[in-house]
Length: 163
View (cartoon, rainbow, N blue to C red):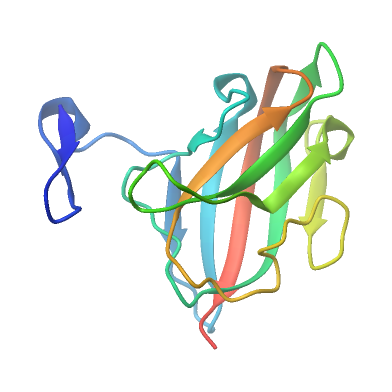
């Protein structure tokens, strides 16, 4: 059982209090921060939804430099599925930018196990938040366009620093 209290803090009890997450942040030795999420493509829908942890926030002031997508299991689809990856505001209901990191990236970029795709400013599938400094914090979200995925697991690494 979980809810958001009047202070905007998520309160969880029982099995939701300490659940294993599919997303987390890592400390690095240099100035760059790394957030990693494992995304099971069959679990996402056509509507943006939170990815991984209910507590993992990409902070305000983070300068987003790049993403790396690693296909752990090849993506498949009954059509021409594309992936969106972005942010939702801390109220858990308002869009910050649902395709701010990855915008309509075709499954051909991650349709072979072990395939790696780098997303940088101006590259195919780069969202509008790549290369910018976030004005608001947010939770990671994912959704698909065009067609649903029938298989695939991606490891997505998001890199940022604080200018």
